[in-house]
Amino acid sequence: MTTAKAHTNIALIKYWGKKDQQLIIPQTDSLSLTLNEFYTTTQVVFDPTLTTDQVSINHHRLTPAAAQRTSAFLDLVRQRAGRTEFARVNSINHVPTAAGLASSASAFAALAGAASAAAGMQLNRRELSRLARRGSGSATRSIYGGLVEWHRGHDDHSSYAEPVMEKLDFGLEMLAIMINTKKKKITSRQGMQASVATSPYYASWRQVVANDMQAIKAAIQQRDIPTIGHIAEENALRMHALTLSADPGYSYFNSQTLTAMRAVRALRKRGIKCYYTMDAGPNVKVIYDHRDRERVIAGLSQYFDRSQLIVSAAGPGIQIWDEKTKKVLL
Image 1 (cartoon, rainbow, N blue to C red):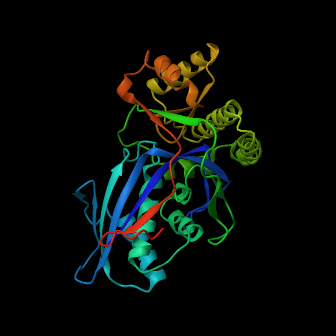
Image 2 (image 1 turned 135 degrees about the vertical axis):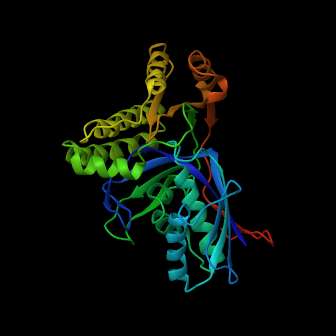
Image 3 (image 1 turned 60 degrees about the vertical axis):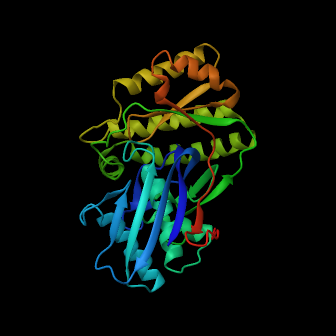
């Protein structure tokens, strides 16, 4: 039995759209921050006595239909490893599922790590990044810690992530405002497909991302948190403009999302340099310098309960170990 632990990541520069749905090749590059506070731990063992994959999430056994996406990913691992046995998968999610907090990123990164090692594959991190991508696009970035870039590439071999700065040496920090942890009605995949197919602004989005990627990597090199935050905030707003401009239009925001956005702007007017970003869900993430943490929390506590505010430093890359011997495999 092999265990892997992988952390979620939040995109500062979004990709929002796939060029190839099967290989999960994105339309654009992207850049994310891996978070320490949200993660998934997954155990995998291939068992010749099983007649089907057995998948449990948070100690709840999934039906074969609910486990179909996991089994499809395990089929890919079996094919590459030359294995035929079904697998027993036990996954613990320390992050709400499908609520816009990148649960699929940590889930499929951990599954890629645990399943490939359990199947006898000895993959390096780039190979793991490519494999994890086949389960969930953002999972390709959760193989690494810190600030991570996903190169969109053009095929299975050229689409992978690599670290921009794995161990941050400056005070970039993120706070998640937990507005709603229920499953969203429109999945990220559904939303992306609708935006790519119907938004009249999608062609411009590709150029927006290209410009933002160049600008944010320069800001990272300068350790310039206000510029990083500003670029991330504008990129998020333009991504969500693609949801509003689809046909039919849709939105992941609710009233508290808008309250959070106004609260961050109000803090900025008071001289606190903080910025927001949102993924495919109502929850808002706030970017700031860790030296301003208490002032940010105090300001947001006027609108939200303290229990809704979760602070996270940059998180580490994937860890894989043999459950019996505790030997670290990666």
